Figure (cartoon, rainbow, N blue to C red):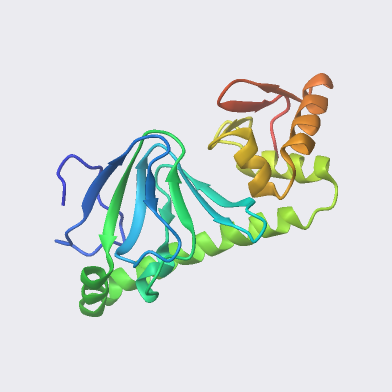
Length: 203
């Protein structure tokens, strides 16, 4: 393992060899239908996961930031099912699937830890799907902001662009801009380049 990286995740079996890769903004990590080599952890920057529909429209699945895993299903798939591109200059850690699967077979405790992490990711995915089912754009945005506020219960760090956030919420970027502008005009939020700040702390 690269000694320059942060401490390994708790679920990671000891002595597993991982690989680091640096990405420039806009650089492709993998494309849909590329052969899988393993999954990745974002250690710096942001990586956008997306698919292109039949009309050529880009559908953003998620914008992953530091500490998040991407393409976990690659452990059990022959090809990747979406594209992954760096939103910013980024750094990722590759967990090679053959090596990791062999380690999990030897270490059930590590496998249980990984399963717990996947369960957490699944809960986060369900939350994103629930947000998309809210019909009102304003309610969808307000719920997103409340759920994603940091430890101060006020600050939401933006991952990627506002356009990326709109796609993740299932809104047009025009609808999201209008909603954010209205909330800001009402004094409910303040905005900077990389953050949205709630004027009243979320519960």
